[in-house]
Image 1: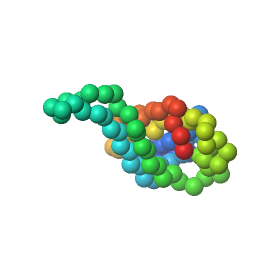
Image 2: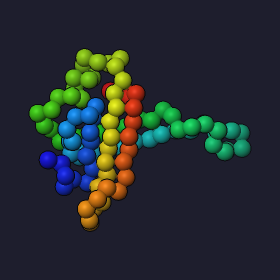
Image 3: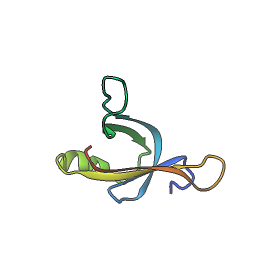
Length: 94
């Protein structure tokens, strides 16, 4: 289904969904001299996916607001077959 797209989302082990737009950020604490003083935390991922019959994300939002989710975004190479990189998370919330 989404094999030819530049990025795909796999949410809670469900089917792949084509990503139309993605933005994410991660923060780290620094010490007084500006050096990194913590592991990455407070990640926020904003994803717009192509509409499908799959309602897993919406169901997670409405019925499982205190239940952690997991997922993976796979970025595909643009001019050849294969995976460029993956962005995975566990214990996330919608």
